[in-house]
Length: 504
Image: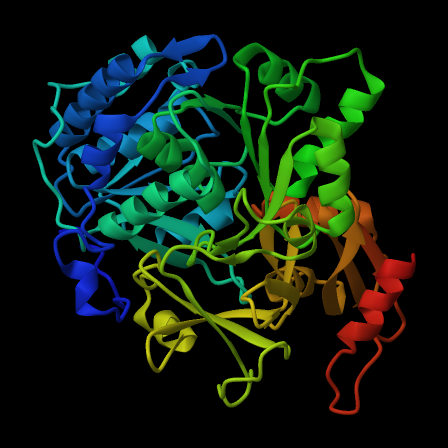
C-alpha cells in the first residue's frame, strides 16, 4: 500500500485563524479555482474557464479509474503546458496530492525526488497530449468527476514540490489545501489582480513561483493564464502583445532577455503590462529601474521560497524607491524576525542576521521529518537560511545566504551535490563548486578541481551527462589547480575561489 503524505509540522497560529471568517476560513483549492478560475492559453490552444473545468473533471475521473484515491501522490514530469495545469487541478478534484517534477531534471534527480514520496501513480504523456485537450482526454480521461465530489480537509496535503536545498539530498516540500488557498487569495489582492488581467507564465509549474502565478493566483482572481513551454524572449514579447498581458512574474533572467530582444528587434506593443514582480539574487535596484523603463510599468521586488512563498513585497501605494531598493514588507499575516544564526537570539532592528518567518502560508514540513526539525525553531519559526535586515518600518533587505546554494536563473543548485559528482570522477581528487555573478542568470557554476589527469569543461559535461545530472547543474567553467586554496582549518577557502571566479 502506498504511504500517505502527512504534514510533519503545523504552523503554530492563534485560534482566531480557525474561527469562521478567520484567515484560514478559506475554500479548498478545487472549490476556489472552480468558482473563480479564468481562461487557459497554451500555444494555439485556448480553453474557457468552463472548458478547462470539464477537462479537469475528465482527467480526475481517469486518475480515479487508475486507482488514485484521496491522499495518494501523483507525479509527472512535463514542461509548462495545459497538461501540467490540468493534472494539478485534477489531483485536487479527487483529494490527491499533486507532485510535479521539474522537467529539466535528469534521471538521477527524478529518481531521488520520487524516492522521497512513493507516488501511487507516475503519469507519462506522449508529446501530443501535453497541449492538445483532445489528446490529453484520450490519454487520461475517464468518467467526469464534478467539483466538490471529493471534498478535502483544510489540513490535507495538496502539493509536493522538490527543492535541492543546500545538501543536494532532495527535499519534498509539503503544502496544505488551506495554506495554498490562503496564499492565492492573498496575493491576488496584494497584486490588485482581477478577471480583466492576464499573466504570462514561463516559470516551471514544478516551482512555487510558476504554480502560484500560473495556476493558483489565476484561480483565485479569474485572470487569463498564458503558459509558455520553453522561454524565448521574442515569443514572450509576441504573446504580451497578442494576449494583452498585464502581469509578469518570474526571475530577472526573463525580463533581461525580453528587454534585449525589445531593444534589438522590431517594435512590439507592451503597453498592456502594468505590473512586473520579480524575485531572486539578481533583483537589484538597477534591474528594477531598467525593467520599469522598458515596460513603462510598476516593477517590484519580492522575497519568498518554496517553503514560504512570497512573504514580502511592496504594494501599489508604496513608493517607487521602496519597491526598487528593498525586498518589500511582510504581506498578510506573515511575521518576520532577524535572529543570530548561531544562538537564535533576536537581533536589533536594522541589524543583519538570519531571517525567520512564520505565517498561514508556511509549508507543512518536508516529507522527511528530520529535515523539518532542522529548520523549525521554537515558536514555530521557519529558519530561512537567508541573511537580511529589517528596518523600523518593516522594510526587508536580503543581504546574503547562510546556505551554500548557487542560484542560477531561479534554480537552486547545491554546491555539495556538484562537488560530490565531480569527485566521483576517477581522475578528480578534490573539487569545489562556487557561484560567480552573471548579469543574465544571476549566478553560474564554476568548478575548481585537483586532478591527476586532464579534466576540462568538455570532460565535465560528458561526466555529468553520464550520471543523469540536470544540464543546469553542470559547471560552466572548469579550472584545474595544483592545490585548492585552504583555510587554517584545512577546509577549502570558498571565499577566495568566489573572488577568483568573479574576477575571471
